[in-house]
Image 1 (cartoon, rainbow, N blue to C red):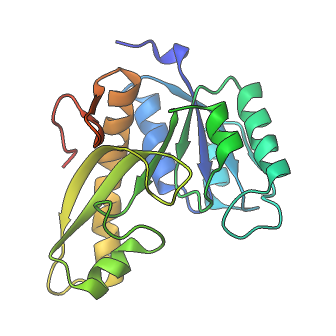
Image 2: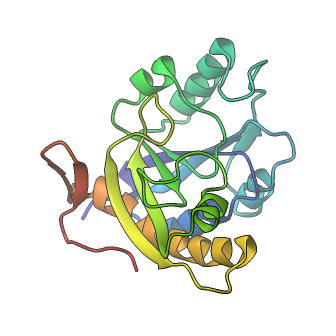
Length: 214
């Protein structure tokens, strides 16, 4: 087992922070072998910052710059500097709404993780649960993946399915997806940190245990 004191996580988020809360509580309970050293947000007053403060975790807002979908280069450098100053080894995205580019990813090679509310490669991008309903699929789900420079294109670490019900609305489907996210994300992150995620051909890493998180 990896000593939790040895691995320091940085969390980036833009919104309410429900996935951050699930991860933070799992770390504090010893279910994830790490501790969260810093929380950063591109949104002043984001709920994730309040949740971090309430748990005694250092947090700050760093303005993203002038671009809508990614960090400006100077902002990206500021994020990297803050994370390095906190001794962060792995970066975990929890509702961070900006694409990360080369400078950031080179600073944490193969150690930036994201969660997405669909079974990628289906329905990348925003509001994937609405995309699933509009398309009429019977099953959607959750994907944990490593981050590359594309939009939700990095290697898949773990997935879990969520059935789409006949009477689902965007709100009800999203709520059930989030419930699965809060279980799958800590499990998948633990597998990565403990070295139980392995590369398989060109499909990316999978959980060596075969767990789906459902």
